[in-house]
Length: 128
Ligand code: MG
Image 1 (cartoon, rainbow, N blue to C red):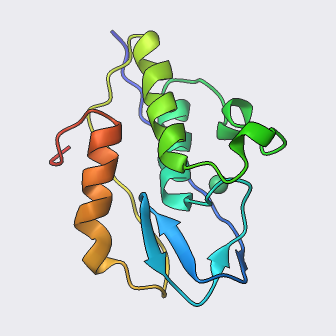
Image 2 (image 1 turned 90 degrees about the vertical axis):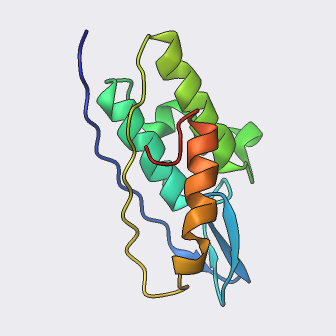
C-alpha cells in the first residue's frame, strides 16, 4: 500500500457577474469568476491535490478547457469524477483540507454547506 499526499492550487480572474461558486455553493458577489466551467476554484484545487497525490496528472488533462462538454460545467461533477478515477486505481481518500485566500465575498456562513458538499462528493464523513 502506498500513501500519497497532494497539494492543490487554483486561481481564476474575476469578470462581470453577480455570484461566485465555491465549494459547490453559489454565493452572491459583485463580480463573477472567469472560467470555462463554473469556475469553482475551491473544488478545482481539491481535484488538483487528489490527482497529484495519485500521480494522475493535472486537472486540465482530465477536463480540458477546450472541450465543449465542460462549458459551464458544475465542478462537483469534476470532483466526483476524480474520486471515481482514484477509486478505480484503489486509492482511498482519507482527508481533505482547503484554504481559500479571499477578502470578498465573506465565506464563513457558507463553510458548513461547502464541507457537506465536498464530503458528499468524495464519500467522506464531514469530519474528514
Ligand atoms: Mg480552475
